[in-house]
Image 1 (tube, rainbow, N blue to C red):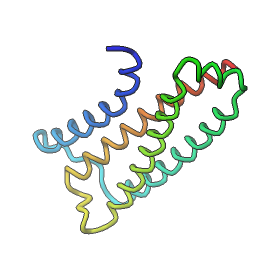
Image 2 (image 1 turned 135 degrees about the horizontal axis):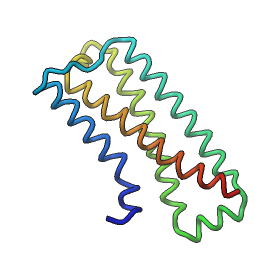
Image 3 (image 1 turned 180 degrees about the horizontal axis):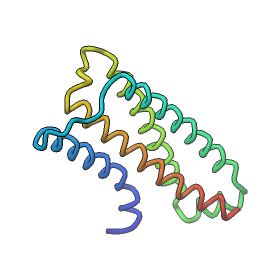
Image 4 (image 1 turned 90 degrees about the vertical axis):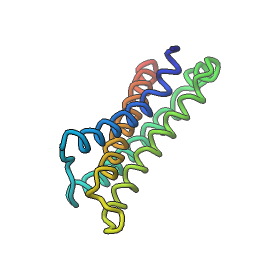
Length: 143
């Protein structure tokens, strides 16, 4: 597998695998995932903080020297970086929205399915954040 393919897919696959593992742990091993309004509130806050951090990271990257931007464009990596930033931002916002939805009594925020998806979104958000941060810090140190 090419490294760019692995880089592109690992946050998604980690999120899906984490959600499936959490669901299977609940269903077959009887493990109870954390739940409650405090957890949902914390995840809403966390998702908002991550989204703010990613917006700041985007601003820093777009403010790089013209030389670095041109090097990124010539390498063909700029579209990937934009996609990664976008995915990380949307993943953080999805975590917020999904956690907010858990406050509704009709959602069933205590079901293993809901909690498993929430855990998967959490893993996806952090893997996406890690990917963007790793790349962004590498670019910023080349300034």
